[in-house]
Length: 198
Image (cartoon, rainbow, N blue to C red):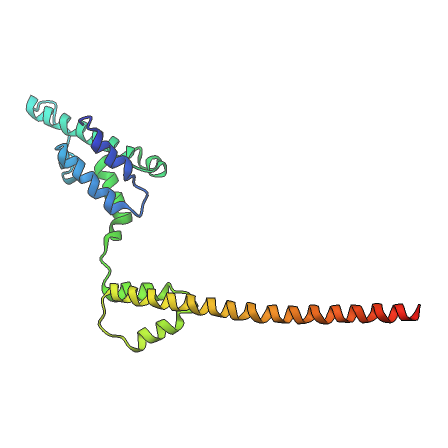
């Protein structure tokens, strides 16, 4: 493969970690297409030609094998160390087949209802009133509208929490002040009575 630094940077920046398989595979295909080696992933490895085969057939076979080897090295270099160890003895088409079986379903499309349900289920119990209101008044809203409404609800919850904290702290200060005042008075009474007896 050509020594193109920008292509190497793309693969270095997007190493395969597992959940990012779809993005990694897309970047890999772009690079292989630019290098004119995408056929390695799309076509099966041809059978080794017979000893009596002409030079052109043998040369095409050897070129394909060399390209498979180079693509395999590029793929391994752009993987996390765990994946490198797992796939070090496989060739590129076999690696891709295995990765597609493992992570191929990661690219499924989530519909609107699933997105909203996912957001609502991830909320803390503080948002139970918001969830109940949303479920009772289910209207056709976009995901952005749901998020904006949720943000407004969050701001209201923060304001309520701050006002409760302020109210609690002002009550507790008064109680402490009264207790201290009584204690001081009690202490002075003891001292004054004690001094009278002497």
